[in-house]
Length: 580
Figure 1 (tube, rainbow, N blue to C red):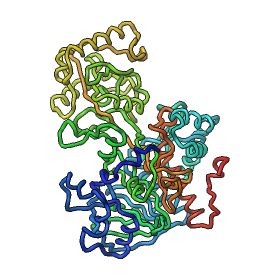
Figure 2: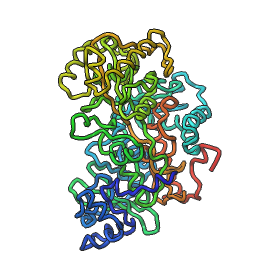
Figure 3: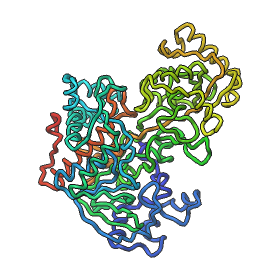
Figure 4: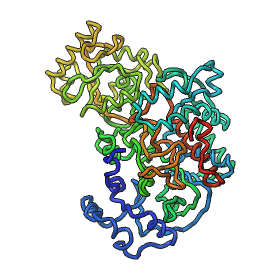
């Protein structure tokens, strides 16, 4: 971990939040009262907080807890106290499977979801990676070796991931699929998709069907799943051990939930502007301006780094915090869904791409690796894709490449020309159309002469069937010659973040010296370790969905053995790999 990761003032991510000692915060909550004067208590210990708040015009408030919290220290009057074995923060695939694993072990558990609906972005997930699952074996794939996948992924990540976590993950990935199927998960296909072999287990009904099935099971076993109930802050015992959380209920009052262990599974931070721009170095596209409304993220709102920030508040370390699951970029403007004709005809296509200088900067043939495509788009200040009328007609008869689960290669869009024209006329998306390249350049704010030279040179290479600049595959050397011409401005986009709190192969959260924080675990996108600096879709498509399950199960196994049980300090990972 770099000094950069630890040197940031956490207050910038929590609206000027006080990072007072957790023991002090816990004492306020436990006593059911607050300082009588906001100048007393936490506010007097935060140094330059008043100056920082003055810059934002928020000098009369002190915030704690989450990135989007409006909780004041003086408001933490606990109206109810609960006691359970485990509290789970988040109800996506990580949170719901942590809850399910807990009830399977006879633990009492409360799962907190800040939004009104459960599932998070996992509800839109299409499938999970699996290696050696019973389903994969039944499809005839019996020779997949965990050693090979482990080595491929370590190579892919340039050994920047945690090898202990990766080794346990690939040794056990198939068993997590089997466990999910034993709990009612249904699959409809086994595909290679972007991966090297068929290892992507495609859900029947997408992730929502899986989440709903698991939630019903959990509740039938006595678990409580509370919606509109954000976790506000962790509690500790004053000696560094986590003892529960403070949550806000639907009525707006605060509930102290004491627990033997807390599992943070809040979905990372793709919706947090400050964290994205600071940790990834890219611009966050969202705002009131119509050309800034497209969102830098795919999926549900509310994933603002809550779990990561709460972990940091008690001294947790970070691991590859800037790592993301990049996606195909978005067309600037209003939010698009995956079925949008403009997205699947104009955007997810190997057409000519230029930067803010109207110059080409890459091979556009990365159409079969959405992570590499998304990462590539972050290397320039601006990105524009250009095609001609002939290509739109060609796409209307069947798209040239897989666009998503709803638009596989060959999917037709028979009314593409008409529908795209309607979007251009509406002006909600940054799509432009012109009869000449020079006119198109002016509409997009590019230099006309430079763009004309770029297009002419590109067309010449298409005619010669050889990309002397960036070695684009011949099949994707598609010329731009027939008017009218189309151009779109695109913005980098993320599905989720995959860097987070530093964990070990038991999913225990570690402090900066590398010691486990007693009682605190992280799973899914709140947990860093499986990946280096990006998602490895070309090796293990769906690995993040499986990691949600794996890390959650690892956490519950360790809680059973070494928190609630009479464990000897060892852990169940010993049976998954030859090390302890």
